[in-house]
Amino acid sequence: MKIAILSPLHRTGLSTVAPLFTYCLTWTQQVTTVLSYTGHSDLTRYLGTSELDDKTRSISQLSKLLSAGAISPENITEYCVPLIKDSHLLDTTSSIITPDEKAKLISFVFDRVPTDFVVCEVDTELDDPRTQEILDIADVVVIVFEPYRNSFDAVKRYIEYPMWPKNKKVMY
Image (tube, rainbow, N blue to C red; front, side, top):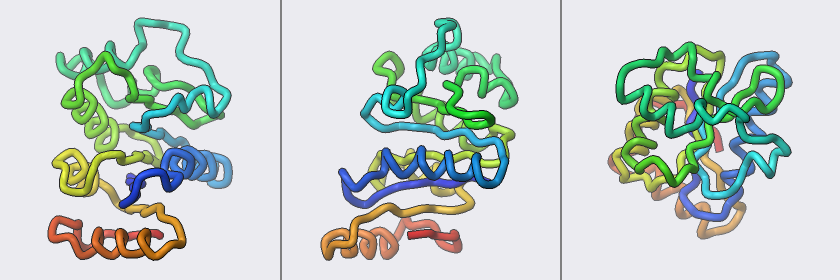
């Protein structure tokens, strides 16, 4: 199942909710998950994990392999940071790859990785083509917001937006 997690406002806990949601799925459902993290903070340090020791398995190397068509979906988790048993983090916060390479990589992982669940934290705006591609692929959309009037209004604008994907399961 492919789950997109997004927020209509910034600073609402999206970067916290996405990994915790992924952890919860892995732990309670005993499934394999991949979290595609696009945030701007050092999530590996926050979660108490370390970077991959093998520098040949970096996000830039993965991007090059994808461009060359030299990687299969089954091998993606080898380029992810292990979180807990059966949970993997694809951290795309690298400044080495371009936004287009990052978007291509996220779409590939989100669409083709053969794990039970793929969770994608979406940090781009709703009208961004990268966001639209992720939402089109997603089976479920999770919207993170705060219990304040401006947050509720932003969610309402999201779901009334003409490009909002219709017939998607949405969790608030």
